[in-house]
Image (cartoon, rainbow, N blue to C red; front, side):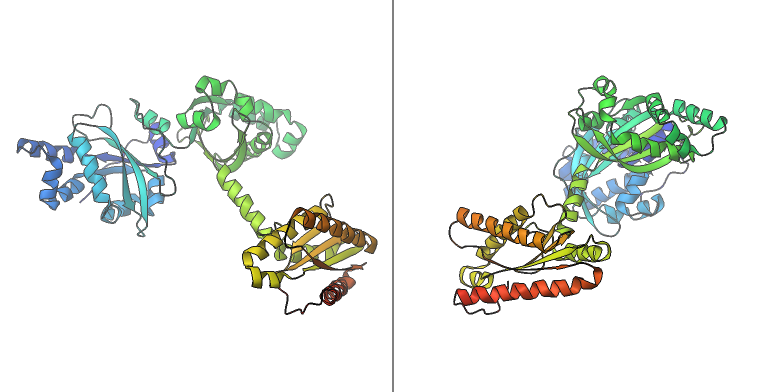
Length: 494
C-alpha cells in the first residue's frame, strides 16, 4: 500500500511555490518501481505490456510500489480529500477501472527509458466523480538513476478538449513548477511598496483611506515601485507578448484604467495586514482587449517582513463573465422577442409605483390571431410573428430610455411610461402603428395585428386602476377587431 513520508520536506521558498501553485502537483518516489522493472529485465522480460497482461497482479505490484511523498492543496481540493493521509489511504478509489489503462501507458514510457512524458487518463474523486486528466510525469534532474523524486502534475480537462502547452521542465524544481503552471504566474517584489506604507504610517497617518483620497498620486507611485521579477510562459500567451522583455516594457498598457481603483483597494488591504488577497480585476492584453481576471495575491512564506517575494496568479475569467452577463440578460429578458420579461416588468412596476416620476402611462397590448396562426400553421410560424412583434416594439421604444416594454404573456405585452401623460401614451401608440405598418410591408405573408389600450395615473393609489383601465380598453379594441373582421374569437392566446 502507498505510504506517507516519514519526515516533512524543508519548507523553503520553492516549497511555498509548490503549495500555492493553482494546479494539482504530486511529488512521488518511483524507486521501488525501478527496482521491479530492473528485476523483470534480469528475468529476460522484453515486452512489458505482455508481461503485465499475463498476470494482472503485476500491475497491482507497480501501483503499490509508487510512494506519494507530497501533494499540494490544489490536489486535495481536486479530489475532495480533507488531507493527504485520507487521499493516500483511498488511492484505490482514485485509480480504478479506466485509470489502469493510463498507468500501463505511463509504465511503458518508463520501461522505454523516457523519464519525462505526458499522458491522458481518467481518475476519480473520492465522492466517485469521474474526471478526465492530462498527466505530466518527470523524473527530476539528478535523480535519473534512482527515480526517487518524480514530479507529477495533473490538469483537469473534463470541460475542455485542449491540453495546455507541452511541458518543458527546467533544471530547477521551482522553475518546473513555475513555468509549467496553466495559469498566469508573476513573482514580484513589493518591498518598496512596503517601505512606502511604513513611511506613511511613521508620519502619524492612521486613516489611510482619507490619506489616499487626499494624495491620489501615492497610488501611482506605489504601482511604479512594484518590481516584476519573473513571469511564466502562460502569462506571455495570455497577454499576447512576444517575450518577457516585450511584456515588462509595456506593463502600462496592461495595468491601466480600472486597475488603479483595484490597486487602491489592494493597498488598503496591505495597510490592514492582509498579505493574502483574492479579488477580480480588469487587465488588458497588448492588443488592447480587456481581460477579466481572478487575481490571487500572496506574500511568500518567509518573506512577510520585507514583501520582497510575492506570488500573483491571474486566471482569465472573461468567458465566465460573459456567461454571467448573458444569464443576467436572460433573467430580465424574454428569449423569443428580446424584450423585457414579466419578472422584470413586475419589478419595474413596483419601483415606479413607489417612486414615479408621475404621471405614469400604461400601454396594454395583445396580438391578434396568434392562436389561429399556431393552430393552423404551427408554433414555428407563431414564434416568427412574436419575434417580429419584438422588433416592432423595440423600434417603437427606441430613444425613449424611460419606457419599459415587456412581454408579460403568450401574446400579451405592456409598455410602462413613467413621466408620461396620456398624450405621450397616444403618441407612442401612433408611432407603434406606423412601425407596425412598415413591418407588414417589409415582411410578405402573414400580417401583424395588435390591439392596444392606454391609461394614465398621477399617483401610487391610481396605478392598479390605470392598469385595469388600459386592459379594458385593449379588450374593447380586440372585440372591435374581431367584429370588423367577422371572426370568432376562441380564446385567442398563445
